[in-house]
Amino acid sequence: MPRVRSLTLYCLLSLIALCLAVPAQAQAQANNSPEPMPMSERDPVRALLGEVHLLRLAFQRWNLNAHRAQIVVERVRAQQEHVDRLRKDLDELRKQMIELKLEQSRLTAFIKDLEDQISREQINLRRLELTAQLKRLKLELEQHGQREQAQRDREMHLSGQLQVDEAKLRELNERLDALEKDLEIQQSANKP
Image (cartoon, rainbow, N blue to C red; front, side, top):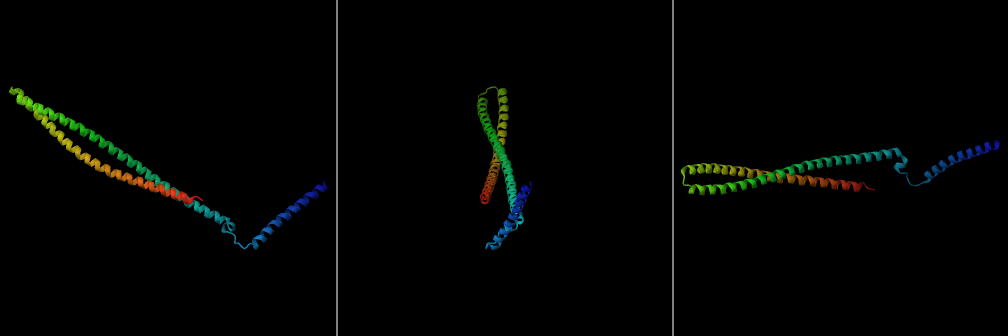
């Protein structure tokens, strides 16, 4: 047992001597080295704080870009919905204009037939009835003409508005593309 104690004591002393010798040797090498130690090795806390600061700035920049991109995406979405709604309204108006033209053509043909029928009619009472009907049809045709003019004006207005809104949509898409390129540039610049 005394031998185990003496062996343990010897190992412990050797370990202490080794621990004291290694830092002394490292200190001697550090004093003999001609190169100055980098800042990160001299003050690791300051170096870590610098890294944290850079990471925080990068995160803030990324967060700001993400926020900008989200705003532009939402504006593009809203503008696209507006453009789609204008196109739908314009298409619907054009269908109505076609239907109105067909109705006008039908009325014009009916009026012509009615005028021919009046000129051939021998009975005065029947001729008066046909003439009254002709006046109503001409009045209806005139109202169709007024409606057609109003629809043409509306079509011109919608077409102009659609062109303006499509230009806005193109501009927003270009801004989104530019933002995407900026993000790609930043990402490639941050790669080691």
